[in-house]
Image (cartoon, rainbow, N blue to C red; front, side):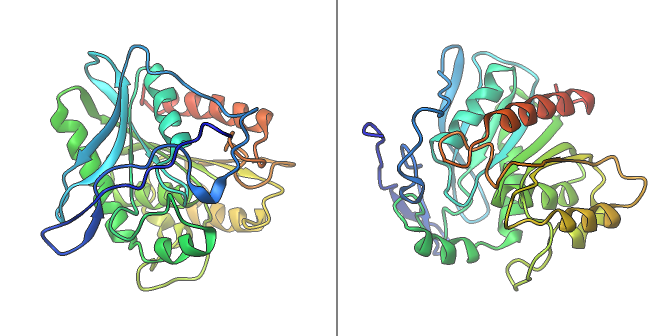
Length: 285
């Protein structure tokens, strides 16, 4: 795609000594190019307040993308959690899609302290992502909620979270972390796996703490997330869970990513329709 732009984000040193990205990259991450322009969805900003914001945290500000209706009041809030490629144009576009429907959507750049994934190869991205502590992610999402509340335009009692791949796993974890979450939608996030000191638990390990209903959207042809692992999580959630799973039999991993060859239009559109119905059914509308 010839018109894709990449900008190296600026960095600052926080008061705790972290080197922090202070701005978001434009365009798409290097690791996902070339972008599939023929299927890429582009949502305009007409009628929206949309752009980069700075989220205050205990270790200094980090960048995020926010989109919401112009002049909106008492807006429901959806936290949008990135893939491993950072807050690039697709994640920003998802935020704008929510904003067009009357939501405030915020996507935090969760890798801001650990490195710049925008100009990185897959081999370079993996160690950056591995260095991001789950505790930091939970804290940054809490900070995004506090930022939204302080804006005066958002009703944070109507809080939801959705995420893709890396962010799908985070969606389950945050639903366990924050009792204020009313609904979650996890797109093909892994639910079991190896543990590390920085990632000490997976969704299956915190299943007993997940009180909010989470909708899991998965691909039956996903080579990295076996359907059997979803069955394990279902069992751990227990018979009384309000969470549900939808598996699209022929869909691969990242079937919602309209800028990648993995995109499957039918599954992506059906999943989005189910997401919106899930939000409404659980009071986030």
